[in-house]
Length: 223
Image (cartoon, rainbow, N blue to C red):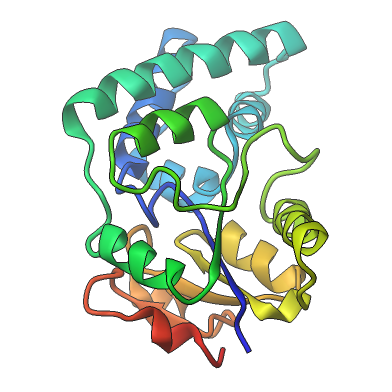
């Protein structure tokens, strides 16, 4: 039986993947590296920023230092926060679904976004204070598709009040996120905010939903 729900953040609660894509494109463009929207959604979606910059430089066959990574991550974050300041939009049904789920289950966020970005966005929504735990970029050594972040969330839940790992249900939008959830032993509901439904079929998702609108937390009870 489901005891806890773990939400990815970007593309699941906040419809902000376009802003992340644009911020990454702008930082890379200043370094002479072109990243198309198609490349972002096919190969970068679900990565944390550090991994994204490492991948971009690897593909460009260029060297990237630790100092540059830190600088690029900070620069991209500042650009992202500027973009969402004027164009923040929630995924359809997200506020209502979170409040409904909070009446039934323990809630957490597991994201490759920076904690500062998550906190800034939550402060501007009606979701602040709804989540028992948050695992963000830098909290674990490896990003999705590695299961480390979801296992860290489970461990944090379990320390407070024991539960089974398969009592956690994940809601994701990226293929690395789906792989991470499945590798952690958790059922995963996929939203089609970033990939069309046909691209998600046959990959082990428990459900595929267009958004959170029109769905009830009760639908997660027996996953």
